[in-house]
Image (cartoon, rainbow, N blue to C red; front, top):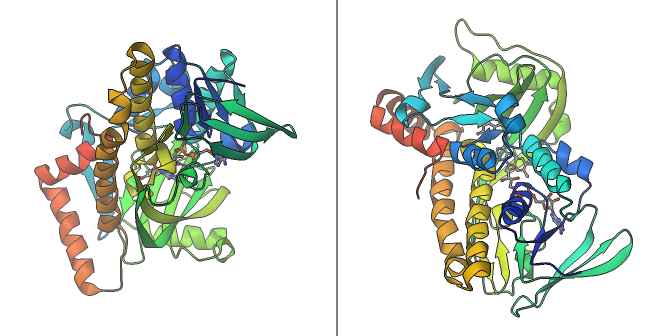
Length: 389
Ligand code: FAD
Ligand code: DHB
């Protein structure tokens, strides 16, 4: 098989890239290791920045997003038993976030891809990249039990943090930057009406907690936990008990309901530089990950592929490699802005160590962001997504 752009991975990055390329008349083939059911059911992020929503709506994917997405113009920061609203839209000239599950975005993208018969191969095994430093890079893989090969002009490595693309780059080329956090997030999905209209980010001496949602009947909640704790140590009663303690506030109650999904995710910051080698371009989690406190992972992945689609369009149209050559530098400007914001939100809101000094600093920072319009605006403009970085 031959195509213009070989895409490894059908997550938000790979699927959005294929969609943007199709709109520009550029062919691609997507190879995905998992089944369609698996990628459509995987529960992950839920917050779309204004720019992500604008891109999806502007490229014809807004139908269900507009109907089912829930627009939020503020968030609550809760600490010391009190809530403080950050009015994000007022502080950013009307920009907002939209709550719409990552798997809903993925379903919409897969639906769009299949509607025009765009090649998308699920359950693909043994994906391997070859000849990246030539003008004819290749991907070998096994599909339906048969070995096959895809010859491409370029390859887009959109296969997430644990994929194979980044590791196909020869040793010594990439500079890797990494920070592990000494905690993880236990996330649950519960069939109960959210106890809040807007997201609540809570700082508590027992640890961070986050109340989010997916729909008027579905709540999504997170707890800071030890990253190595087995999930079996967290029966439902313990999860709810801990959530009640960390969200405690006079006159407010947390509604409980059946937990239908539960998992623990470690927290890590990671960046591989540059995001390109030869004819391979990395995008999304394959190149960088952030701790989820700033809700940025999915959004920055979409930004990467927007930059890549524009660069490929320019190259196919005029032969100019200028935008492709600056792909990595352009993306990394936003990647590092997002790394800084995610680190800021993480260290603002998590219990870092059993140290009174650190705790007082965090409380002082929280009080400042809740009382200074300048500090609140800085948080807000990063949270809804900066237009230009
Ligand atoms: P992915 O979504 O990881 O997609 C990569 C795709 O490549 C996958 O479908 C995978 O199956 C496929 N793949 C992997 N290896 C191969 C291979 N060898 N061959 C072919 N295909 C392959 N962000 C938030 O903002 N908030 C959250 O609450 C949040 N929770 C998260 C929870 C978890 C468990 C994880 C892992 C991430 C979470 N994130 C969260 C981050 C966010 O979901 C990611 O940033 C986003 O999914 C990035 O999209 P992507 O397309 O780059 O990568
Ligand atoms: C959600 C995830 C986040 O990482 C976040 O900061 C806010 C909300 C969510 O899954 O809804």
